[in-house]
Length: 118
Length: 110
Image (cartoon, rainbow over all chains, first blue to last red; front, top):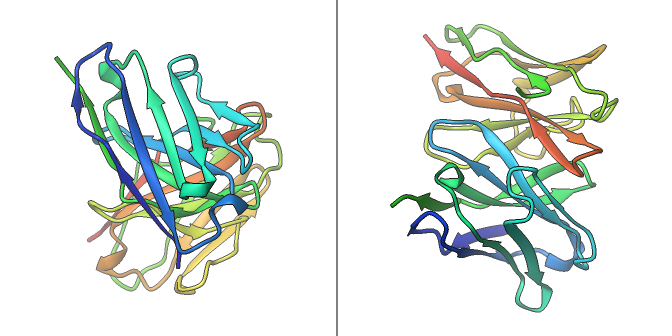
């Protein structure tokens, strides 16, 4: 069974940068597109970004476009999210998720908590 | 405002059947399939139903999905206290190249 484990979440000041990571195991990582989905405290789910298996197609929500960059290293079975110019409204639990058949998510990590506050 | 609209809350008593609706209001979603995720308190979301009515392995058949026109529904029969959770519908948005989620429905078992 596949597993996704996020890391790197922490408290960071507004305007600063942070990179979070996701380690995948139990499946052939480079067979799948991957995404980040976030959930602000007490709020619903919000899609953040996506990357296809060979990293030549990426997508971003309007709320993070120009500030966040998604990347992956298939040799290391890892997914990353580089977050720049962080804002308090970026405070959320960031989930790493596996996309299936181009339409739904079957594996979710436990989340990495990013808190943006002075 | 989400293009997928869910009721913010639903409730039922043990053994009852509860239905949660998800209506779409954007052409960007078009006829793309609707999927359902269950988020138990303090845990990550879990895929519950995909492509309107397909259950992943391990999901009890008490959970079922359906489609009617521009809406989708999730039905939970034989309601149990363990079903108390937030339920989210989702569909692929072609303009976004990513999914949109409904606002979520908090299910309470009375």
